[in-house]
Image (cartoon, rainbow, N blue to C red; front, side):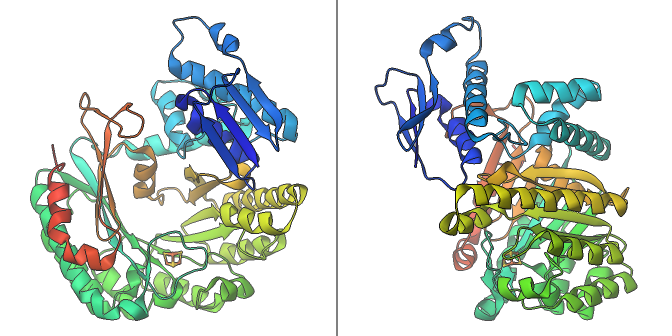
Length: 484
Ligand code: SF4
């Protein structure tokens, strides 16, 4: 058990997340506002690991902004915990999930690579390797995003929250199709109504990218897919559309007929996601398809003319080791997808380990996971796939990241937009979260922190039945922000 004693709530969020990154398996309790001699104390089983006196902060000049004081506190925690654990965190004191957004600022300010990397290292204590990766990706993102007109453009996300079965590690709100089959048409009715509304109020805007995700969009029957895509075609102008992705996802949901429907509607990018090419793992994680299904569907899509296919992999699935990852990557290399996204499943792995093994073993497991991620990067390079987007997960053991790699000109623009938060993304469907980027000078206070921000989120209800029943309310909520 770790206790964090803090006089001010202002430092609490970062103190918690930095400590958690060092001790993912430990329960952490925060005591805010308690009368203690020190400004901050972090204890493990009652023994102090970090102590910070008010005087240390007072030595900073009065003109130092609160934000810089926070940075001082964070660095102090980080250095002390590095000393105690004997390890460094790849992403240093960075607690946010979008490192490239920070790197992008520096790139846009005209910094050289070295300047941007040094700034990243000094301010966030990230390793040289991660600083270089972030700057490399930011530069690539910048080049891709320059094609877009943020001010007049927007992107659209359409959510289909059904899956053939539910994977054991699923953290999305998805519903098993066999239990919800009867509701799918009613869901599509509501979805089309929401789409009609968005189309109507967005007539003066340019639609730049569309992403149909979920869940698994290809759980829809061919006629249902056709109905949805036809409705979208009659609602929006695709004149400025740069990318249309359908996350076909699970091979057990894809058929030739469905792929033909996608081709008919000019879908430019699809995902066929194996997650792993180990049959033993697929069997235990609840995905009812075989490795051969992945291969067959991939080649079927190629044969039908899809020239931008993404594949998702997960490092750290139950029972997998470095050799499994290598074997998976060898098979992926044979297929040669146009992009590859590598996720790390560190949270659940750590939780599982936390129940059964000691701290040292957990570190070595985290090291193996790190090696899997490195191996994926090596194979991606061999396949001529370059890193083009990156995000981190909260509370991730070992502080790992998820990286998207793509061939030149095959990067998923929508993925970059999600990370960089430069363009509004209007999201329709159950559980979909619209993100509106307000025009310059129109910031609003964040409900939690009170800080001014230029992003407004409008969330739809997650429950499918609620979504259908309350569709008019969902539309009304969106209407309050589109396009103020
Ligand atoms: S395919 Fe994705 S959304 Fe569906 S159950 Fe598996 S993890 Fe969840």
